[in-house]
Amino acid sequence: MRILIVEDEKKVASFIKKGMEEEYFTADIALDGKEGLKMATSEDYDAIIMDIMLPFIDGISLLKEIRKREIITPVLMLTVKDSLKDKVEGLDAGADDYLTKPFAFEELVARIRALLRRHESSKTPTLHVGELVLDLQSHKVLRGEQEILLTPKEYAILEYLMRNSNKVVSRTKLIEHVYEYHFDPETNIIDVYINKVRAKVDNNFDKPLIHTIRGIGYIIKDE
Image 1 (cartoon, helix red, strand yellow):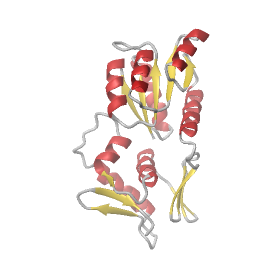
Image 2 (spheres, helix red, strand yellow):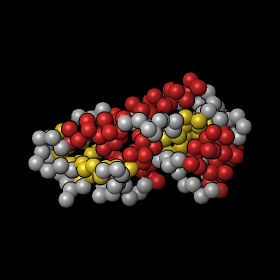
Image 3 (cartoon, rainbow, N blue to C red):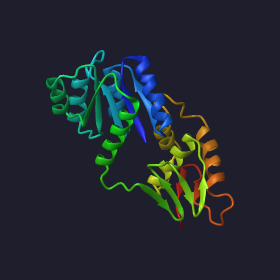
Image 4 (cartoon, one colour):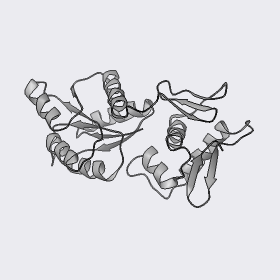
């Protein structure tokens, strides 16, 4: 899943990004409110982690503008302020949760996962395509009785394909969801990773699940 981090402290932003990627998220960083607004309104994110004290556009104003544009992405606010008044102001602006700095990274991840569960109440804890099962909590992937070991990027690609099973997913969409905001769209890295995922998911099995739609993208289906 893809997370936007809007945080002007580079060390904090890098710390959150690294931790999120270790938890199998893809993470983008915006270092000020103006860049955060551009990214939040032009890209598809599953959640946003946003500091309140930001250059150019503060977090509260940024959040209000996002909600004004009818973007319902869950938002967790970060701040050094811990007064009830500040928390109420953030929640009234449209925040879904609030975390005061300094914080334990484990709590941040737990809160993000809780927001995602609430936001996608219909989401099941596992994804299925035929006998292929992906567990969203443990990150385990099984095909039949065989466990398939994937790197974080391979897992992210397979998860996105499975969330869009029976639909053709373009290379551009995969790049947008799995890689950073400024990633080069002309690279062939997606094709390389698809081949790696396919080798693990389909090799040694009678029926292939991942198919290439030439000139368009990829599809995973059990047909």
